[in-house]
Length: 223
Image 1 (cartoon, rainbow, N blue to C red):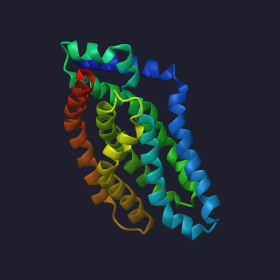
Image 2: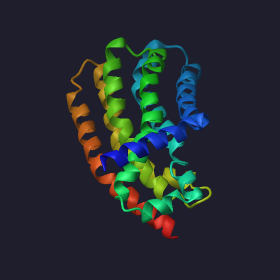
Image 3: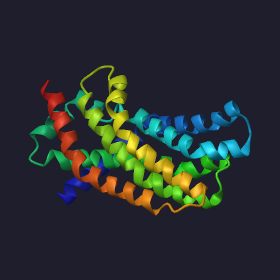
């Protein structure tokens, strides 16, 4: 199963590299939202600092959500999903490899880009490690939870709005913990509690969401 998992990750990585626009869209959206915000509220450093934790996390959440609509769509259209269902390999392992490859090329790139954009908002340098840690723990949760909605709406031609309605309520705890960790760091308070909760949610989603994604794909393909 380890070899199957790695082969599928490599396959998905190659397919994503052939569609650079799909990889760039979430990152460009993330950068534009943060770059435009100072123009809208003004250059006041204190105001931008106080708003930066929530802004960075909301922008990251929406950027990840933007990239999820087509997560399984190409596989659904070319019949790969049906082959996955007929395969002797566990569907949970296959979908976990798919989501992992997606996160490596979109979520991880977003994490690496975030410090530069956070500095544009006046976030102090001492807060950057907390920003990276919170996004590194939180973006896999966003991808895995979003993949559940993508699996349920893969057969719909315009499922983006329904995907957002299904998934956004599940994102609220991650948003609260991620922005709360950054806000605590900005105020000089301990952040270990927020990060430990995010780590617990990451472990929980990695363990349970592949089963929900697999069930969603079975429902969508059977229809």
